[in-house]
Length: 380
Picture 1 (cartoon, helix red, strand yellow):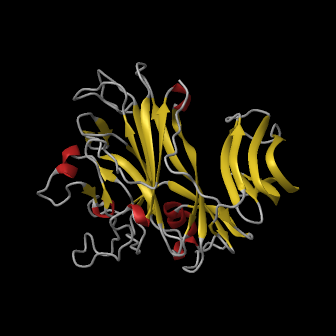
Picture 2 (cartoon, helix red, strand yellow; picture 1 turned 45 degrees about the vertical axis):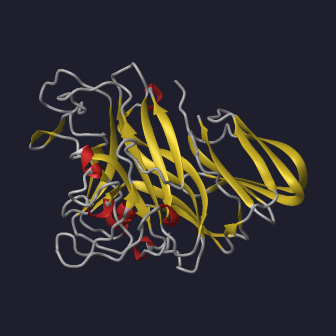
Picture 3 (cartoon, rainbow, N blue to C red; picture 1 turned 90 degrees about the vertical axis):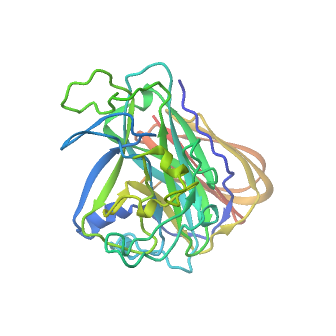
C-alpha cells in the first residue's frame, strides 16, 4: 500500500533577498551535545489509550503517551553553538521542514496504521507562548501551551496544517530512523511554532495485548506499535517558550473530563509530572534578510516522480517574466545543486539528474525577484 500524504493548508510563496543562515535546530540535542547538560535519550510508545501492555524496567505497565511533539522558539540562546545561532526577535524566518525520529513495528497485516502530523502557528492555539509558571517547584519555571483537543479525533482540529500518512511494511524500522515533512512557512519575527504527531492503530487490539517486542515476559498477542524518541532534561533547564508538546495517555477520557478543567484542550507543557521531556523533533530553518509572504509570479510547481531514482522533473508556471534561480539542499542545509535559469515566462519544464546523490530527503527552492517556492523529494 502506498503512503498517503495530505497537506491541508497551502504553503505560501515568500519573498527573499538572501538566506543568512540555514540549518537544523533541535532543542534536546542542543542541550545534550552543545551544552553538555545531563540529558537522557529514550523512546516512548505512541498509543491512543492504556488498554495494552509494554515492558518497563520495573515490570509490565501501560503506554503513557498518545502524542508527542516540540515547540521551536527562534530566540532561544540554546542554539548558540558557534555554528547555529539564535534568531533575533526582529528577524523573520522560514520553517522549511520538520523531521521526527521513530521506530515502527508491524505484525498485523489486515490494515495500515495511521500517523498524523500537525503544525501550529500562534494563531492556531489558545496560548502557545507563556511565561514559566511560578510557585510549586514541581512545575515552577515551566512554560506551557493550551491547544484545542478533540476527544473523538484524538488530536487538535485547528492546526495550521496537517499530514496524514498510512504506514505499512515499507515504513518498518526496528533500529530507529527519521521522517522529514515539508512545511514551507514564512514566520513573523519572534513568533514560535509547534509540531505534534499522533499514532492511530488500524488493526484491532484488546486489553492485555502487548506493543513491546522487546518485553522479556512471554506475551500471547503482539500488535503493531510506533516509537517516538525524546530527551529527558535531568538538569531541569526551564526557559520561556521551550517545552515538550506531549499528550498523556493515562486515560484517554481525561481530555473530555470537566473535573480537572481540561475538557476539550490539553496543556502539554505541564502534563508530565516533574520531569522535562523534549521530543526529538528537528526544525529545518532558513533565516533571510527579507522574508515575507508574497504571491510572487511562480505557481503550479510539481516535482515527479517522488520518490525518484535517477532524475526529477519540475513543472511550473511563470505568470510574469522573472529571473529564476534553482537550488537543492540536503538535510544538513548544504547546497548540493544550484543553477541560474535566467528570465523565464509561461509554463516551464526542467529535468535534473540526481543519480549522483545519496539516498535520502532533499529540499528544492525556486527563487525569483518577487517570490520563492519550495518543496522536497526523496532520492532512492
